[in-house]
Image (cartoon, rainbow, N blue to C red; front, side):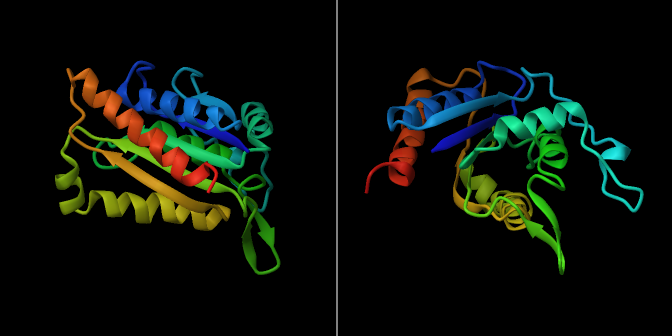
Length: 197
């Protein structure tokens, strides 16, 4: 099984990035393969171009998107790692999905409209916020992201949602033992979802 770890945080030493490392180590310990896609580290361009939008005049993905789709072609699990900024995913991640998961990769034209092309593959998300988890849940922010982002992307692409783990109260100076505990939660989730049953 191959996992694409898609990380959307500008600091490669961030809490969010540490979750991706823990996830990668855990799935590799199970004998799975990983592909790390550090969007900021790659200097990925999230801006969708006019000629990339399907229209009656046609469209074509740019060279960087063709290359990215080739890298992701054999991915079984798309694992997203990102912070909540204004209670939503970073623009970098949204732009990545707009450009990479567009027509011809995640969905295509069918007889009765668009049809998903990633059926049988999985989506798992790990998010963090400075606000406490209880507040994120109480205000509806978590459910909004799950509905408008996870569930919609999964439905359009044909992905099965495995899980969405959110970590709240992640602030500068967070104690290292708390980080280690949350990393272990990620490892436990990997064992639960992908380990031998």
